[in-house]
Length: 224
Image 1 (tube, rainbow, N blue to C red):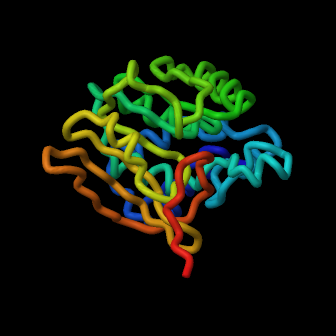
Image 2 (cartoon, rainbow, N blue to C red):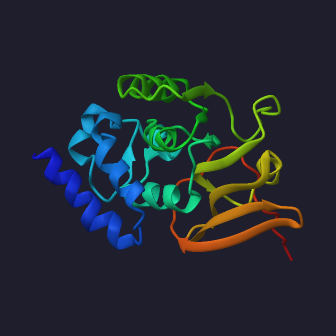
């Protein structure tokens, strides 16, 4: 496989057509080597428009342990508009690729991963890639006490949730942004919430279904 040609095709045929037009994001995707964050067994799929398993067990796949499609990661990065002075929280480290992208844009990134094995894998990937401003922490993003780490300028959820997580919204600085994929299969919406004095300003710029983050609350269901 011609790796550089595959990377070029990923950017030009998958990512740019999905309305990712920010030149800084596109240039970053050409620099950060996605293939170095993919498990060796799936490296040939590094640039494919698909979710890549991060565990070769049925349990891991059932738990949503996957790398998201490149176009989704790129669109999240574009919509969040992370700046060099900002502090970022990511929930759901996975392989560390999204954390690496955020690390190149931000001053500092704290990324939380529930699975010990994935956290170690991500940490090794980030160290090897020279991304040194990202801290990988084994913790449950749904319940972890982050009061000593916040507030944050940006919070990115690399997995879906049933509703906008109010607890995490409370960790945003004024003007801070949170991006999450919210809803239930078959309809989930990318939800960008910005903290303002009058409350959260929410937009839903696109739709996409991705695996659930574990342990986040689900909306109440009424039964008649």
